[in-house]
Length: 450
Image (tube, one colour):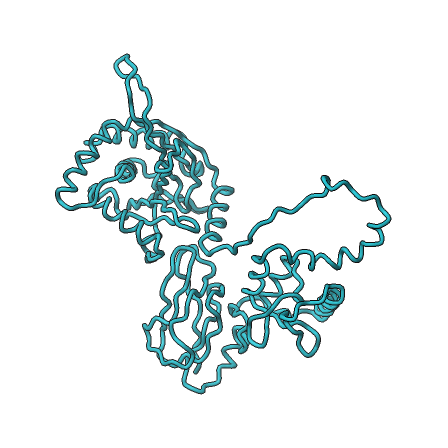
């Protein structure tokens, strides 16, 4: 019996994946555990393994194609085996059309007759009114309709694109997702051709009406449309939900970092002598937060409509910037680890995060998050809470500023910390007490060693 290969859920926030590359050709034999492809999720690029033995009979998705969780990617089975039943179950064609999940809505071909007739009429009208397509444009099928996958048709409709002018690169000239994206990313000189029908229809009126001054005619800004990565989509979805569902409030404190910087200098002299990773300011903050979370369980909690969960483990996530977004690798049990171990783990996680080589358990399951923009010279900022956490700490730059000590103005080193809190779980006094404890430990760093 033919075996479907579906897009698996590879992270807690993943809703779809991009098939980054195929590593096995059609017709090749594979065994359970063999890596057959690489999938780009919202967090990392991960290996896709076969869970059964067999021959890779059909690849349903081209490299670069997006597939929802549970969508059909490929079919395994015995050589020469009929796979039509599997394709029919998933609503996927044998000609390379976009794969769909088994529970996804039916394709446009199953729509009501009235809707199909309206769509056909609109398509034909647009094709007749449009300027002649280039020779490379996709040829219509025998019934006059342009060949396009359901996903491509939907994308074209959302973007107001005429499929008659789109070049298809799929099997038999079929228009697929990447063709729509290519048109949208192309230079804007194609716009006059798409606007030609509307201009032609309005020409008689335009000639009779007075011409508006050129300065009053709005001009669209030139630009390049870049398709959103899976990571950027996840950031938009999750942080949008967080910002508009969690009632944020913010607490800010200035920390005297003079003692912490001297403490760090001494530690790093020892680390260099022993060949260990040097401790950063961020590592000091991670350790201080982890210790303070022991005494403030609500800051280490999470919210659901049924209950507030107070986590007994302390797992601190650290925001790491990447080319197309950010990711939050997790230092687990940070309260139990020394500064040298935190420093080593953080550097390893950050390096592999930027290379998209993290395993799911290395960026999931945090109970608290920190975000540091101090290296860019940012004095202070506020962060959006990283769900399911209920707090996130924004770390600013260490600034040389005048401070008052013992009644005298002297040079000092100050760092601003801003705690974003979810008011459903953390009240003002609770967040303030936590932040004061973090401040106290950073200003007397030897207490972190007790």
